[in-house]
Length: 83
Image (cartoon, rainbow, N blue to C red; front, side, top):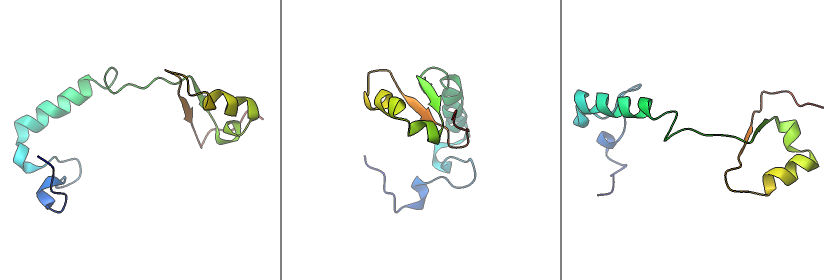
């Protein structure tokens, strides 16, 4: 069954609240599952964390353009480049 996005009952009904149709017990169970799996199912591991300035350096461009399995680069815009 596809969600009807035009129907407001498919959307969250307030800050941090899941649809009232689910009920509080189901909501609590789903929230607990997500919390329990944050460091496993939803975990991300990065080869490197780089600044925007570093992302423009030729040797780093070559590294992240390889797109090797299991290699991801996290770009941190607020981080200062290494020069």
